[in-house]
Length: 140
Image 1: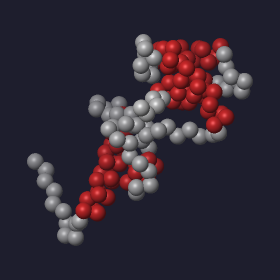
Image 2 (image 1 turned 120 degrees about the horizontal axis):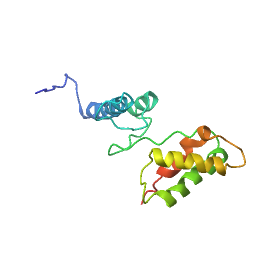
Image 3 (image 1 turned 180 degrees about the vertical axis):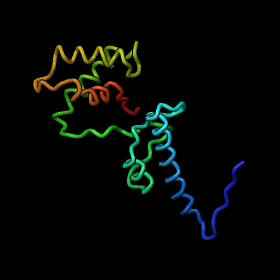
């Protein structure tokens, strides 16, 4: 059994700081296991910058093993159409496919190719935004 003892000068403020750092590093560990395909890992959309920001209390730590929000880079005008496409697809396919999977990705890839938006963007350019729209769950 592992036991810990606090060094002299330890106080509740240090406990709070350690709890934050510990959770950020734990999330990084779970993401690393997922990335390496080790059993028990979780997809948390956690990168080193997330870990550092969370440990330094510059970024919130999502609760209950929830992933970080994806970082959408670009303007809303670029993201709106593919996010809406994914959101609408969830309304159509969500009952049979509540989570993103290979079938949904291939189905939406084919649909995107058939009715691509005015910018003519390829699937690889928008798939992350489409998935975000598909997986989006408004807070109740």
